[in-house]
Length: 286
Image 1 (cartoon, rainbow, N blue to C red):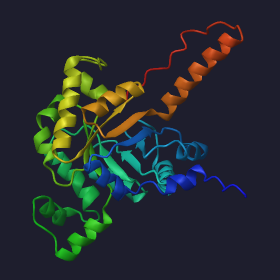
Image 2: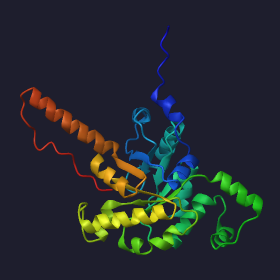
Image 3: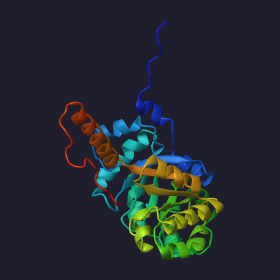
Image 4: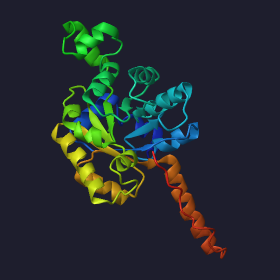
């Protein structure tokens, strides 16, 4: 008997996730695991497809990606069944629309501090292509015609996620979470630690209390809650135990660097070459 052919990573990935499924799972509290992808190499995309991720995170706030690069990356990862969550450079609805137009599987808006900012982003993510006065009236609670409401609901399935990464954002969190079109919040630990006056003190009790509060309130509101963290898997698991179900672990570059440093250190020891410097991965702060 001939053994069945093993499925490729791409074939396995294509059955995984669609943007609407991701939004539903986030709101339902299901745990989703992804990583930040910085490489624009097509080979990287194929390798990532077989890695066990639920989605990928593409960051145009901190990573130099032009619109064409972003577009092919979104199309490639979406084809592999990995919805590409795209962080736009600022909470700009036009930037969100541009990312969605090239295939973003969800939008992450950075440094949100008010419900008004969330509503503005919701206009781009949940009600496109409506703009102008009609959109302003809808965001103020005036419903569209039933046919248009149904059309927009079926068309705009990508999740809207906002970064909570400052003390003012925590103070406004109840109002932010009350915006109906919001699907999830995402902690930005580096900016949050600085806003708290505790730069990079990720073990400080005040920082951990702030994270726990954000995660707890978001989950209690029926939304997804997550964090993008460059620490160890054990550290990520702690945030999961606090309620995080959107886990963005490190990045392709950070994970490559960790593995490379570890392997080279082992190889040099086995070959009797001694240590080369500290062999410590560079700290990344995004």
